Structures are given as structure tokens and as C-alpha cells.
Length: 279
Image (cartoon, rainbow, N blue to C red; front, side, top):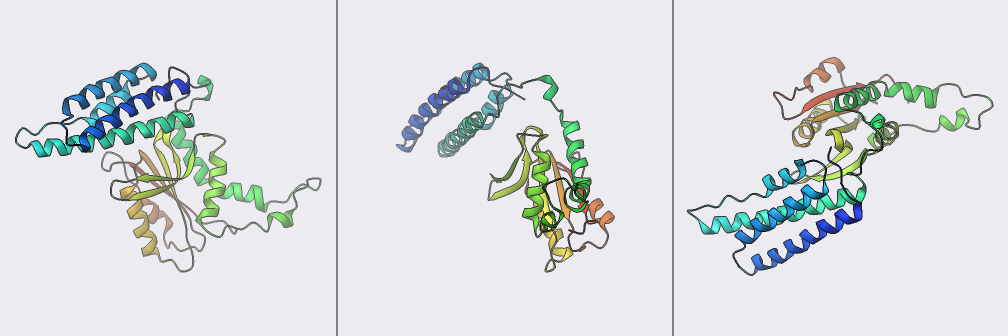
């Protein structure tokens, strides 16, 4: 993952300078002026800024690819339209990059010992999901020590009622291992917004959580998961189902039907069902 080479406030200042230059171009474009050449010169300035301030070239390369305008020699109007789209996309990319720097996403790693590669990260998440019920048993259902101040009758009051409860507990298990994990993240899927329950940006891992309920049908659950599987942008998507009401007739077959390899799909898709909890 790329890291910033300088202090965050310096990097943010440089990005703001490029954004200010961009806003001037957008203003000229809205005045019907031809900014094609000026835009390409500005893109080169951005490339230089990103290369100087980030440790790896991927960010600047991706920016150039995402904002490239191929002129249509047969239609000036089409070229102008493409420039307008590229101007807006450039604004979105730099605004997002600035926000990520402000959040600390690109801060240098504290220690190589803290690094977890993607394969291990996926394995850890899988273990947490598959053993979710063991946490419930150990934390809420097992006997408490007589000298402790946490009482069993207090723990018995905590019940999982819906997927938001599952999300909260699951997030609390993931966060200590992956401090950059985020929950309830809204993203633009191109035509509409989507909400990720839990996302680990560094690894491209998304966890979608479902909790079955009495008024839900297995068909409805299948439709929701199908839509999520298609629309969510991730390298590895976990569908985590807390089958509270034992809705799924054949869990093994259900998990298999929602499993895909990235070679034949645009993402790794893995489904894990937990149902052996009385909680």
C-alpha cells in the first residue's frame, strides 16, 4: 500500500492547490471555453504532485488512467462532453484522496511486525466469522467468575434482535486486529449508493451481514444476497448470515450456491452461516 512521503498537512496543502487549479478549469469549461490542452497540462501537474508525495506510483498512474480523455476527431461536441466528465471525475478523485489522507489512511506503517498480508487477513476474517458463536458463548452464555463485577443476569439481558446487533458485535471483534476497518460505509455504485456493513479498504474485503427474521422468506434472503453479490465492489466479499430463526433449509447447499472464484466472477465470494446459537 502506498504511504505519504511528507507530513499530512503538507500533502493536503499540495492536493488543495491542484483542486484550486481544477476549479478554475471547471469555471472556464462552464463558460464554454476549450480547456482540453489546459486540462492535460493540469493532469501532468497532478501526476507530478502525487509522485512526489506518495511512496508508490500506483496512485498517480490510476489517476491518469481514470481521467484520460480520448478526443473524438469526428465530433467536437463529444470531445467537449468527455472533458466535462473528466473534470468532474478528477474533482471526485482528489476530494476522496484528500479525505483519505486526513483520515490517516496513508500514514507510514509503524512496524513491519504490524503488517498482515491479504491472504492472512482473509483467513483471520474467515475464522472470526466461522467461530462467531464461540464468542457469544464465551462472552454472554458461560458462567461468570464469582469475584467479577459483571453479573450473569446482566449478560442475559443482551439479546441479538437484528443484523445491526450482529454487526456491532462482529465489528468489535474485527476492530482490534484491523484498526482501519470501517462500518456502515456508503459508496457510489455508479447508478445508486450502496452501504457496506464492514469494510477493510486495505485488503478489498467487504462483509455483508444478514440476520434472518420470522417474516422473511428464504427466497427474499436469496434475492437480497444476489443483489449484494452483484453490486458490491470488493476483491473478497463475505456474506455472513446469522440464521436466528433457522430459515435456511439446507445451510451447506446454500453456502455452496453463494460461493464464487474471482476467475469466473469479478470478486471472491464466500458465504458463512451461523445458526447454532440460542441468543
